[in-house]
Amino acid sequence: MSSSTTLFSNISSNSTSLFSDKCTLTVLTVSFLLVLLVMKETGVLKFLQNSKLSLPPGPPKEPILGHLRVMPSENQSDVFHEWAKVYGDVIGLQFLGRNIIVLDSFQPAKELLDNRGLYYSCRPNFVVYELMGISPVLTFLRYGTKEFFKHRKIFQSFFGKRESAEYIPTQAEYAKILAGNLIRDPQQYVWYLEKFTTSVIIRISSGYQVIEDDDMYIKIAHEYSKKLNDSGSPGNTPVDYFPWLRYLPSWFPGTFYAFHARSAYKMMRQEFDVPVEYVQRQMANGTAQPSFLLYLLEGLNRRLEDIEDPLKKQTLYREELLHIAGAAGTVYSAGGETAYATLQTFILSMTLYPEVQRSAQEEIDRVFGVYDNGVSRLPEIEDRENLPFVECVLQELFRWHPAVPLGVPHRSTSDDVYNGMSIPKGSIIFSNIRGMSLDERIYSDPDSFNPMRFMPKEKGGKEEPYFAARWGFGRRICPGRYLAETQLWLAIATILATLNIRKTRDENGKEIEPEVKFTDGLVR
Ligand code: HEM
Image 1 (cartoon, protein in one colour):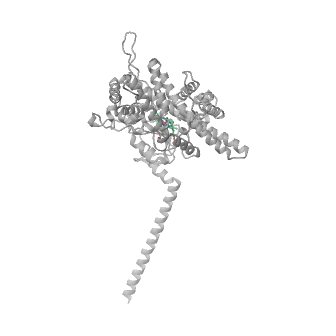
Image 2 (cartoon, rainbow, N blue to C red):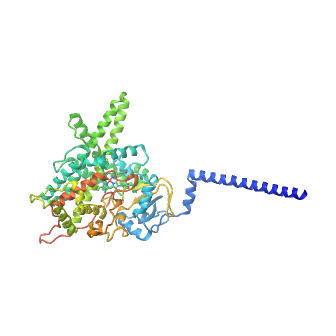
Image 3 (cartoon, helix red, strand yellow):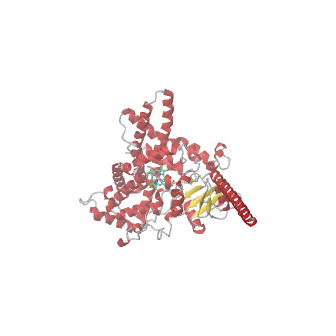
């Protein structure tokens, strides 16, 4: 009896202690999980995890100033690429209290900006551009705002793949005019390339037809891009970092770009407002041609018809007109400059690589016969797939010297960890598109212009992949890419079919070697 009692009491006391231990454990586990959950929700957990991790490696920095004094003031994309060879393809820089992450190869850029796009799609402050009157434009709008989604939707519904195909006849018409101008006056080729790209984009966006060489819209577009190129590294000037600098007098250090921006304001606004006024006049006369602006202004008129209150009507009109002007201005500034830069690169590549030009022309001649021999016609967009080498020339243009070498900077909106490296919330992310184009793990001899690299092996090529970074990344990928590709293809196919591009000669008939030099700025 006693032994059984003892046994029972032992069992009972064991089970009680076991039960209470289990209970304590459960309470502890639940509390721990709750604390973790609260820490996760409030971001404390990520902060603690990240604070143990270090930022991506980068060049040595100084106390307080960080990397300020080593930041390159020119050729940033090339300097970053050289650094990547030493520190790896994710580089961390710090200055003026900011973290800057440079992504120098495709894989991390795709992982962060595309796969984790929810947290990497914002933009830094572009205070200088705002002071210049460049607002509201999709390129610089913050991700997640009502305005962002509104502008992005407008672009996607007007410049999607199917919609862009509708502009092909206009692009083809202007490509022929371009070839004619180049044949007539080859010395002025830079001017005619600019005229071509501006004419196409202004026609699509406002229905306006550029005819004369001294056209007002071309002058506006030209001045606009000049002022933009002189306005410092995008989102990266002291005024962008410390917006209060804009209120200080111009002699105060760091205020230079605020002063520059204010003095450019009136001129810059013309790029946005003049085409809107033109289309409004045409609408009033009943002569407006189909265009991006007509589509937006008609949509606004329909919305206004439903509003009775004159004050509400007036407010909506003012607000929406600003957005319409901003969206149309984005089309000229984002679409004209980039295509113009790419075509200049095309001319340069053809002078430096005459054998590439010959191969492309032989392909065209094989398909169409020799132009001007009565047996030929000019290439049309339907011929694109029958001209694989011309296609490779276009794709190599996107890779060899990308028009937007550092992309448009993104900004992260959450603390993150990538490959054991901390990427703090608020980091400015540069996708070094130029650096990616030089990746020797993907492209053999990347400095040389070699369209054959993309051709199939059985045709003597290397089957290297097309340059995937050319349009940027994720939720900010270029919405004008379909429009741009057809325009550029038509221009280069028409030029190759009708002209021979070669180096100019000096008075002794000796070829002058062109200088390979690109401008700095958002677009080179
Ligand atoms: C050769 C021609 C072009 C090139 C190389 C190019 C390249 C790019 C690149 C690299 C970006 C940055 C994407 C990112 O942030 O990751 C971009 C953005 C953009 N592009 Fe293009 N682009 C071209 C033509 C065009 C055209 C024709 C249009 C307009 C019709 C256009 C409109 C835009 C806009 C609005 C953005 C900003 C998108 C956003 O922030 O959400 N682009 N482009």
